[in-house]
Image (tube, rainbow, N blue to C red):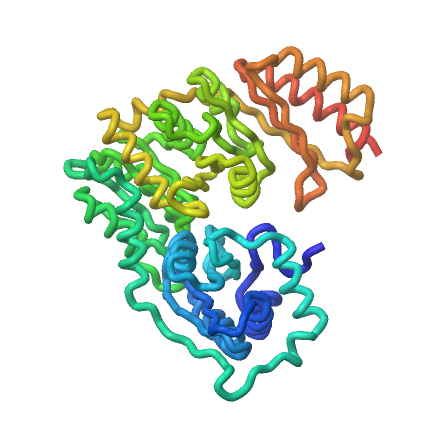
Length: 453
């Protein structure tokens, strides 16, 4: 079991274990050792978001990597997907992102990309952990000319901007569109507005004044009401809200109505289906995506494959099955034809391309998917057993599944962080599914809940 790395790198409160400068240096040393494979000079890219603590972690990581004889390429504040792109395009051995994504500014994190721009598999993260935990890394110390050096890539933002623009169809531009973009005072505060302006849009940018402490603070994809209100006030055509490291996006239409990741995926997948660009006519989503997405794809001759929650699981399934579009309801979307990880700005550009190609406003395009009513109830449990091993609960779940048929579903899972069991039901009738969810919750409470014990 991994102790240091979580589902998306190492994360925690900055200057508190494990997000200390001492640990960052050790992570840098261990990672540099793992990525060294031959006698040639090796290079690792380091980028970050706009958090105050990014400076100290960047310096500690850089020192650790250089101490192992690997060179460092510093790109400064840049979206997570931008660092993945720079890592692959510069043929570096790895990339490091210093960011806690949508978390508040006092948190920070460290995550890695391989030389191909994809996130590290579990076994490589385990190797890094083992080197640190065993202390073996302490005795491995190059000297003299074998230590590494650090250099800054001054044009990283420009390279990434050129790349993003290249993903937008050359026969179109954004002339005549008024776009509000909220960069969450995060890593995309320069990149996203520049890309949209250079493609011809009239851009109203908010959340573009980072001070080290205001990242994600009342702005960005966590607070879509900011961009929604601006769109209504300025009568814009679309609002785009990114998170702190700009790997996900939530948008709103010209009326200020929120359009989540499921709807964005539906719009883009149906457009790709129409032009025979969706590999195997299949979209990859997670179990949290609304069943309305499945119905929309099925009606158009496509299908949806579901994975566990987490963009890394979506990418793993996409690579395994040869699919080119996947994502999460939260706004992480992966267009594998263009990039290796979730990219909020790139996703917004693909959506804008559909608007241009179809000539339709976003409000009309979003009607392609009707989200089914959904109810989510929790119950505290005193133990975690397979609920389907309890005959009374299994019988009621099977009965509800039969009543839902192909037009609804049940998702029952334990919380990863609390002693809770969650029951989520989707279906046509809100009152019906609420009643069924309460019945199942009561049965679970009777058999496994604190009240029942």
